[in-house]
Length: 361
Ligand SMILES: Nc1ncnc2c1ncn2[C@@H]1O[C@H](COP(=O)(O)OP(=O)(O)OP(=O)(O)O)[C@@H](O)[C@H]1O
Image: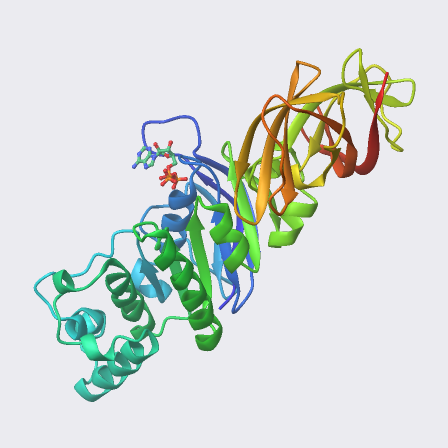
């Protein structure tokens, strides 16, 4: 089932400012589509409009190329998995999974077959007689998932379904969910504020902020070609460095001491932001007198994160592979970047992707 959003707008009753403006997207059949963005940006609102739980203010929603704005939720033939699993505490796992099918008065044999298969898919066959209170968080999550699967709707909407799980279980469930989606050929729309979740699971990611879609792209696309400063800052840990600079005489002047080389021709006298991912910063650490002083070092196991101050002004985060022996107070030499982005300081859009050396003014 494909889904199309055309210029969707949502205003809640009693408010003049829209929560969402002009949201358009095409979600292909069998696609895992993630909606990401900070708290309050309207992710759940968008999902609820697609589900039919709240009305669309304007714009059109197409399900399989048919306008679906006015269809009741049950007519949309989709299933939903929420952050709170919404399981019935007094029903067994089996009956929880069977609930929707029973409510629709499906034949008994068919219900048994579908529920059994759904429970097997999520590895819960041995737990079918238990009550939700006797399950772990991850198992409860899988019951909710089995219920969505048993409905055999081809579209599954998920709102932060893994947010109540501990880090280890989350990582495991991400893989299981992705596998299930592939195996069953589901079209999944997945809401999360977690960039890692979006990056690891999705075929395409929609980044929402400030009532608008910032970018729709593949996970690599949003990382390698962020359309603006917000997207660049949202993806990647630790966060991208953003350094103010002005374009003068064919070079980006960071301050009176430093200049970043660029081969882009920019507007003379205009302000830009240099965006450098921490792992793209080139440094020399075995120097007596470098251009930056280390303020903090975090050993991350396989990597070392160094926070340093360039010329007592600009803070720069650097990530180095392996365990590197660098200490606070020490000087390092920041040499430039293997790759960096240039953003326009006014509208914060991406102007170009560069590589260059940081040289003395
Ligand atoms: N029923 C409602 N009436 C009025 N405003 C609402 C209603 N529901 C949500 N909002 C507002 O709409 C905005 C978007 O909310 P929404 O729940 O869609 O955000 P979200 O991106 O899912 O956030 P989170 O990640 O925190 O769950 C918020 O400012 C919220 O306060």
